[in-house]
Amino acid sequence: MSEIKRISTGVMMPVIQKLLENDKSVRITVTGNSMYPFLRENKDSVELITCFFSEIRTGDIILIQRDDSAYVLHRVIFKRKEHVYINGDAQRSLEGPIRKDQILAKVNTVWRKETEIPVNDFRWKILAFLWFCILPFRKTIICRYHEFRSLQRKFNH
Image 1 (tube, rainbow, N blue to C red):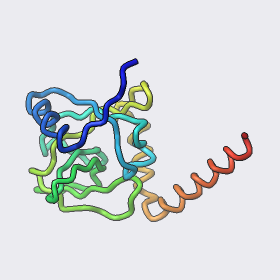
Image 2: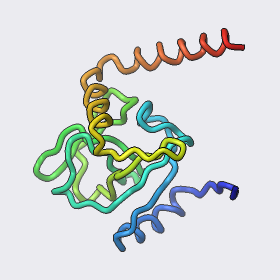
Image 3: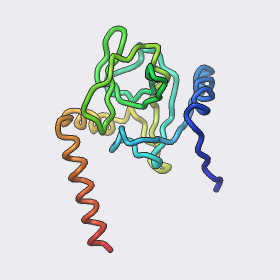
Image 4: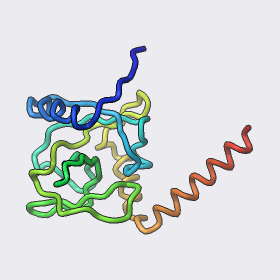
């Protein structure tokens, strides 16, 4: 098995953008916890594809570049004529408006280990919708889940 090399976003993004401009898809490992539990840091990876603004739908996960040059992978919560509002699945506040020119790509597929999960899968979409509906309770749910997992590990050892 080959060694995994970490590359800074500043070095990697120009290459990714060039590939996307040439209609290539790009698979990257998820970093950060803002999309937990749907995307897990350093465990899941995503395939990015080029998209037009007209193709973006509520519930899509998109890659954007903020005005401060940071890159973020978040879910579209709602779309307007010229912009979208996004939110990380582990967050409670909306970010936006995100302009068309800030949108770089959208996620086509998620890999959990080597299991491929198309983001247009009906089960995936239902779970994402339900997760959105419980927005005010997310923090509590995630905390309780981690407490439960901690107890479970303690009793299993």
